[in-house]
Amino acid sequence: METAVLLIDCPDQKGLVARVSGMLYALGANILHADQHQDHELGLFFMRVEWTLDGGQKAGDGAMGRAVERFAASFAPMAEALRMRWRLRRTGQRPRVAIFCSQYLHCVADLLYRSSAEELECEIAAVISNHREVESLAAFYGIRFEHIPVTAAARQEAEAKQLALLTAERVELVVLARYMQILSADFVAQYPSAIINVHHSFLPAFIGARPYHAAHARGVKLIGATSHYVTTELDDGPIIEQDVARISHRDQVEDLVARGRDLERVVLSRAVRWHLEQRILCYGNKTVVFD
Image (cartoon, rainbow, N blue to C red; front, side):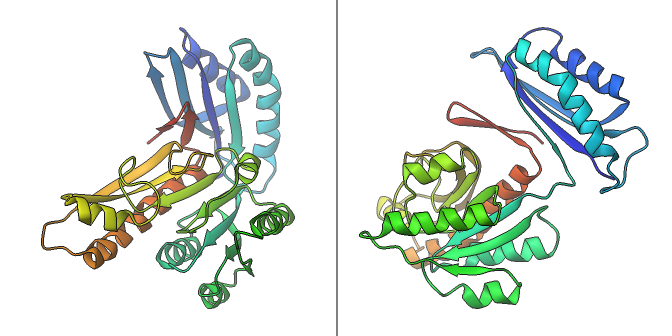
């Protein structure tokens, strides 16, 4: 059964749920899931609605596509009047994803496996790396691999090649699976709220490089990992997911790194899945992540 997801954020006011559900009812839609959230301090309203046509439609039969177009045309004037930001997407449209990585392969290996197992509703268009360690892994899954070295002197040229590849492959989401390079502001601007990074600490603690070493030196009792959208500020984008593990004084840096890898895999895959399922809304430097 093919469905569509509507995401909304706007200034809060009475009657918003009724107006949205009423328009879907008039279309002949059946609401499968609906969730909403109010930020009372800022006076904002957020909503996610997943719906299908009454009786359901098989993916690819065209009916949902036509229904989405009709709904978007009738919804747009009301959305403009209510100052809504909104997105509407059919679940049958599988986004194209590019994975960036460097020499650490645990996160990219996990994402490639989950994609092959149909846990992630996407098409992985390419794996891009400034090293060659991942080349054989990409080949195993039949995914295009591109080796684009990055040096301080040729960083701009490398990013131009990366962006050209992303455009040619019609990529909608970029996933940084332990990609140990900082993207330029120009690169980030091409994919607003569409670059997901995993950082190997419980942000905002221990930003930047070698966070496990910093955590060990500080003697913390919990380590964590964080997935977040990339902005121009290093490790400061809207947080999507975090997880932690308890450690003790007996654990050395190598132990923290080993335990942290499991956290990194989990929080990154969750963030990617939630993004693909249209469950995330960004506002300010925060996110709403719908169940």
